[in-house]
Amino acid sequence: MDKVIILDFGSQYTQLIARRIRELKVYSEIVPYNISLSELRKYNPKALILSGGPRSVYERDAPLCSKEIFKLNIPILGICYGLQLIAYLLGGKVKSAEKREYGFAKLKVINNKELLTDVNDETQIWMSHGDMVVSFPEGFIVTASTSNTPVAVIENRKRKIYGVQFHPEVKHTIDGRKILSNFLFKISNLKAEWNLISFLEKTIKKIREDVKREKVICGLSGGIDSTVTALILQRAIGDNLYSIFVDNGLLRENEFQDLMRKFKEKLHLKVIGVNASDLFLEKLKGITSPERKRKIIGNLFIKIFKEEAKKIGKVEYFAQGTTYPDVIESTSVKGPSSIIKSHHNVGGLPSNLKWKLIEPLKELFKDEVREIGKKLGLDEEFVNRHPFPGPGLAVRIIGEVTKKKVKILQKVDKILIDEIKKAGVYNKLWQAFPILLPVKSVGVMGDERTYKYVIALRIVESVDGMTASWYPMPHDLMQKISSRIVNEVEGVNRVVYDITNKPPATIEWE
Image 1: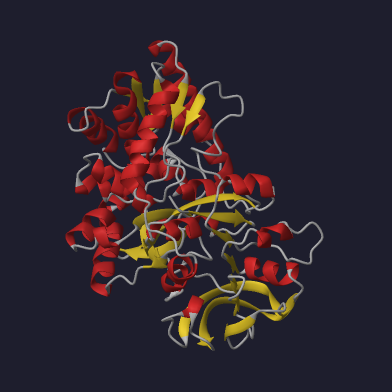
Image 2: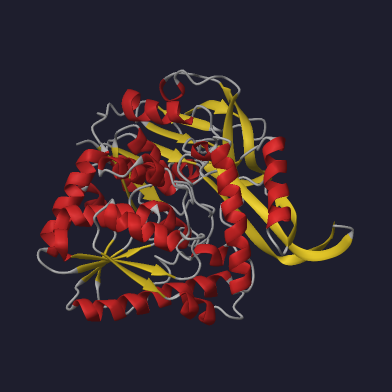
């Protein structure tokens, strides 16, 4: 099977490049930028992509790959920092731009052959750079520019080396898919052979071979990721899987009871339910730091899993539903990416965890996980559930978490979800949820002055969670939701709407 290797120079979009390539049915893997040439050759790549990154090529200790990669005689595409690196390593010049270019730009196509075949002139692209190429290497031509960046695309068609200053992998770049497709099929002559069925079959086979007859516990959160993880393991090892679902007091209203019934009756999972809501709320008392919350919750989950494991007997493995976005936003596993935040199922695990870890979804994005869920028999309602964070409502309550605040947010969440489902927009959205802010505002209700909490609504559209756009909710629906919240939920007198895209914001507030 043809394979594309991506060298990770630290871009927050590196995994998104891999996702886009797999979307085009070509297999891709990510490796560190400083991989040795001998190791790289073992992958037998048919093409190479150099990712973006937050550094400058001329900085001391900047991440640089070996110039020997250009002797592999395979097509190479550099994206953003990757373009600058190609120019720098091959004798061009890069310098700090007078004006940083971040956000939307228009691409002026100078030559629309090869990489830019069928790409429209003045097409919208997404820029994110502070440096620029001012002198390109011998043998290259400039095939596109922007108003602020004269060298936006370079091509050496003889050596099949290409570079773009923008990000074709994000959905904000309108013709990004065309550009990647041109590189994969027109330039590299790859075959579209990769699919999720073969991934699922290989994953089940590998788990079966690794685990054999050992026991595995799987932490269920109630979301699609952990549920699909449990179903994969159920296919692989049957009754040796023990799923544990913990009520941490931070779930949606009545969710623990509803999901326990579904897990047992519909999915036929062997599930152990643990009510630990009082323990979690007690440990979170007085804690306001988002990272502290995540660490505390993650450690409590592990403590409970260990206690339950003792009752089960000898347990060798622990499984969880970690996905690509969890990994990239928590820590750089394969490259020098900047840490945005930790996730409870990544950053909350203790370093001395005695179990061997199973994370069958850690190379997948949410939409891929959903597709696998369908193949494993999950119904549409469950597959289309919006993502819900492992730490639950704790990261949607800004500041200290209390039982009273949880109750408020549960009621608001129910109103929001009910109304967007009634309006028929739930399945069009990536996520819709309320955030309880740590401030109170003055209001007037029933001719009396009130001083109550503020709720922010975060509703976004996305394909994979790596980038997202705020949803322009119809005003009548917005008004209905707001009116119901302030009239039906005691403790709230104001509702605001978050209109920030990702990037620059993340989807969750914490």
